[in-house]
Length: 316
Length: 321
Image (cartoon, rainbow over all chains, first blue to last red; front, top):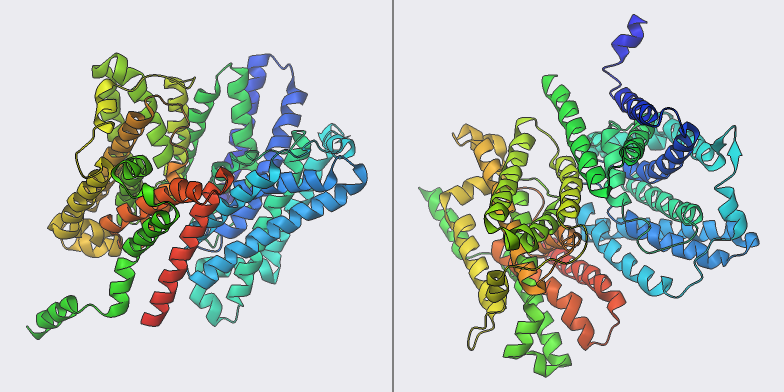
């Protein structure tokens, strides 16, 4: 027990789960226990989307200072349109549609990396340029298309296992694999090593550029995947379906305890942060707060969390 | 003694690649104007410039706001939403109860200064703190202006509607912004301190300057120029909505980089940043409409221009090394 308590400060991400539990209890107290199952299902569903996007962003940000993927919202929007167009309402094309969304995402990741490498420009600007172009492709491609998901794909988002949506469990499983990959595989350790010191990693024989390429492609693929899933969940694609994930993907990564300076990543924290932020919205919703209050609260919470965490770092 | 002489020599005979790199923002702007003139000669006229460049003023001011933050090695992800908030306040409170509006706007500049202090004192990553502020300003803008509308104060509309004989107003405004900032940031000693913090913070601190004061000042100036961007924006659009400035965060970052600035090292150029903002504005609106490219591709063209200019810069830089 004391060992566990001693371990706590080393795992700051536990606090995001504590926070998530607190806001969950607060909203239950307010509704007098009504609708608990609904809150759990909605919270888990929305949190799992944030986790998929956040995982990609986390791998990229772990590569070191300046690494961030700003093309995720445009990527998600385009992937949602491509997935829905390829599926064109037919259940037999679901796999092909998800595959097409993944390929689109990987290509966007490839384009991001090509710009970073060939033009030696900071990732922020490279992914920003890509995002401008992808956004335009999406607008001109997504116009006047059949955007509804096939019935089977839409129904998939409603499948439940012991009351929990199946796709949430799949994302949970995927995130466990990602956590293992991050901490136990050559790839994951290389990402963290590059984030700690790119030159040292290169001198240690790590194929730095190949790892960076793979990471940007992985992030793109996760963006594409979430585009397809979001289109199924919200029953249709749209160009602005991914807009909120520009800020949200960075927010869950940072609140989850991943270092913005790179070299330190944390998957459990990602879930904690995503649940915390989503349940915070749910709580404010049940309190009857409107969108503006929810935004202000979310922003203040992000600043409060980083201030508290930053203070701990300064003490060390 | 000989060292000083060497520095002076180096300065007066800048090597060709450096000269090329420094002039790249202006060369891109000139190329952009030539392309527009070739596609539609009538656009290169007094009226044409007034129409094409009107929206360049808020973009240039937002770019300058971002530039001050980048100068001290930080990044501001809240610029656009701050502009939205100030624009929302301008078309409501500032118009209905000017005193209250002025107090709110002055207060929000102080919030900007406080953010700078918080980032420095707690050694926080500015991306995260300003990300939080992006949510806050977005929410506050919605509170002030839940529905699109409002009315810009008459003096703002008059300011943006003013016509100067012979030279289009936007060009005068851009030149004034660029020249004033060039002298304050590049030619004064405190400007050098600000840029020095971007280069080597602890060296500036050892030399006896307060880093805290400099960072607070940089963020405060970012707030002031954000307010000016919002003012000019509502002066042109006469009304506002809570999302009016959303795209300005990324445009402003792009403008600074297009203008020859770098994220690290305090290497920024106010004149370049203004040129970068003008280039982006011309690219997104005018060039495309004259090339009859559908509006779908507006942001795509911005992306392509960013890539082309940065590719040129990379090519010049590689030859230098």
